[in-house]
Structures are given as C-alpha cells and as structure tokens.
Length: 176
Image 1 (cartoon, one colour):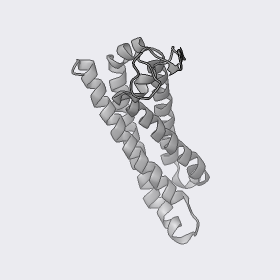
Image 2 (cartoon, one colour; image 1 turned 90 degrees about the vertical axis):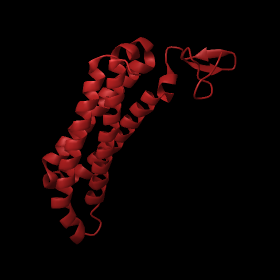
Image 3 (cartoon, one colour; image 1 turned 180 degrees about the horizontal axis):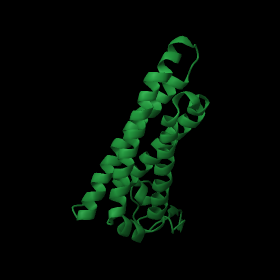
Image 4 (cartoon, one colour; image 1 turned 120 degrees about the horizontal axis):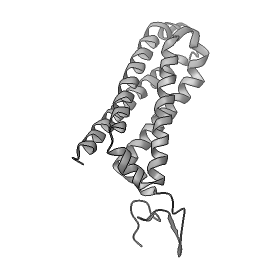
C-alpha cells in the first residue's frame, strides 16, 4: 500500500502499523493537502487569538469594551465552524466533495475574512486609544502588547480566510 504525505498514512485512510491499518475511518491525507493545511492554520490562529483575548483581554474588558466582545465572538464562530468542517472532511471524502463544491464554504470564508478584518480593526483602535496610554505609564501592563499581537493575528487570519474563500470559489466554479 502506498503512503502519501506523512509516513505511515495510507491513501485509503488510517495509519499503517507493521502489517495492519488502524483508524481507517479517518482520512488524515486531507490534513496534508493545501486546503487541509489552510484549515489547520485557521484553527491555530483562532485558538491563539482566543487564548490571548481570554487571558489578557478579559481583565481589561471594562477599558476596551465592545472590541473584546466583537473579537471573542469572531474567533469563537470561526474556530467552531472550521473545526466542524475539518472533522467532516477528515471522516468523509464525500463530505469534502459535497461541501467544498457548494456555496457554503465560499460564503463562510468570505464572511470570516470580513469579520476578522473588522474585529481586528476595532481591536486595533481600542489598543491605540485606550490601552497604549496605560502601557506608557503602568509598568508590567501586558494587555497592550498582547492585544496588539491578537489583532495582528486577526489580520493574518483574515488574509488566510480570504485565500480560502478564493480557493473555495474556484472549486465551486470548477476551476480546481
């Protein structure tokens, strides 16, 4: 049996171990494809942003207000939907072919791109206007640099979702 991408992974699904295969219901090859790597990157960025927002943003929520709520909502929405798509794609080749060629994934990624861009812009405004002055006068005020990192990562996630939206649209139109 031929293996693709990661050593031990099989084109029919599962993992080759010595003379047998385990986890044959899981299509790990999806995760090594271009679309799979984009999805993993989207999940990674959403989880990093969410972690930064929860750990460092919530203590200063009264200062930055709705910018935090907006960004938290965006990361939670995008992480959840992308995780569901990855699970569907890993467990079913048929799901990949049906969902990817539908308009759903194109619209989801376009909306996610817009939401990340707008949430990151709002967080950037909040950081510059309300957190930066505190950073200049309070030693050890880590909310400003971490929220700045979060909104930069939000812009990156916006670009990644935008690229995924374009690739989804090409797949939808049959340009593969």
